[in-house]
Amino acid sequence: MVSGEMNAPEGGNEIFDLNNKIVLLKNYMEIARKKAVYGVVLIAFGVVGVCVYIIDYFTLDWQGIAPYVKVVILTSFVGLLLWGVFLRVVPGVKIREEQLEAGLVTSDHNGYRTFGQLEIELRYIRDRRKEQTSEADEDVDGRRKSYREEATFYIEELRRESQYYRNVSNIVQGIVIVGSLLGSFVAASSFFVREYSWFVAINSLAIGIASGFAGYWKYKERSFYSQQTADLIEHEIESFDLQIGRYEQGDEGEKNLLFAREILRLRQDQKMREQNLDQPSSSGEEAKK
Image (cartoon, rainbow, N blue to C red):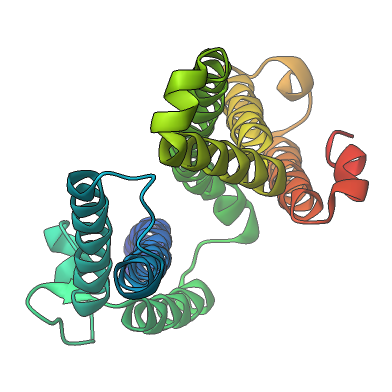
């Protein structure tokens, strides 16, 4: 009997540690995925830019751009190409938490692990958590109460996403605003339009691309909903800790059940909003509900 009582907390702590590792691995997987996407995009931009320069150099020889400006543009595209190649040659991320690094089963490449390796690690840790959950003496009510810690990590994940989308939205909006002002200023000068027609074309292209990305990916909306869900979950955790609001009445088991059910509902609502935002613009109004 004494042995069972001593093992229960240890099993609970093991499950808690595994939950933390799962959250960390999910964050690293998202970083690795974005790194791979950025690498492909940069390579595509670099290849297109270099190809356009080669076509212009051997066939078109557009006189609207000064030769030194063409060299600067070519250098920029080559830089993007090399940056993208670097991101693809050195894929994945480096695990910085020693405790997480020690429990991984895949081999790293110069300290880096790819998205596929992280996915294998995630499945392995989830299997370990299932085994610990089935073997632990902790009852269902205790697992519901421990769900609070996982919700805390989920808040941090949502806020990181919100900050990321907010930064991207600010950059895109800045390009649109500054580009529009420059376009209006340039349009008022016939000399500038005649001598620097290449700048007018690039400026218009940048505005169009930025507007298209903002309309398709809905960065501002994604940032808003991630921050909103994080605030709601944080409010729910504070209410649960202080035993106020819906947690003022009932026994401990009922409160734990109510808390776990509400957190799951908020997470499901967030997933539904993300799915709605991925739909075509005609479904955009549904995401606001």
